[in-house]
Length: 227
Image (cartoon, rainbow, N blue to C red):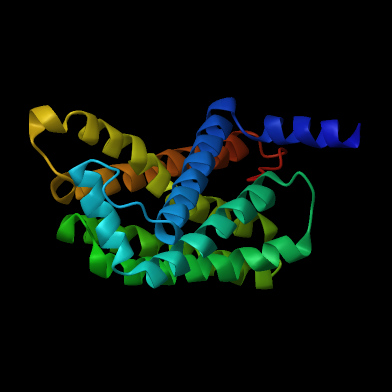
């Protein structure tokens, strides 16, 4: 019964469309991480189309760095779901959230040196990873100060920005599906997909956070929760 009440409370705090988008991004991010992990530890050259073989070769050429990025990133995504949706409250989960986020951001900077989409992709990674780490750092600062509301707003922003990499995947899928017509390769469309994915998530979460603040202004007696 208590779990049902918590689940209903979570649903009431978040619009259905936002929860759907969040879980879509979480599932895609974890699926991509698992697929990349398996491809690195059990490579099967020659079993994929030429474009995909070139991508796999790029990641395989710096496999250690890739693993150092995707494993903490996958753990961070799981922690983010636990912390933001809070099916239960656990202090140690929140404590792990910050270091794993920092590792994910730091290794994303390092991974940008091997950007498949060149400077366009690299610029998206640098801009949005910086925004992610800034939001994460500010959230940790507010956590130290015991400012719960501000902390959770910034944690929400950081997670949304990071999950932009998952939103970029359907965009990449469209480009792959239409490559026979457009004659565009990954080196040409990866940058566009990265900018689109990160920008979509950033704009959506900022609009939602703004709507929460506006609702609080119009209803002063109402507690505005970002949980």
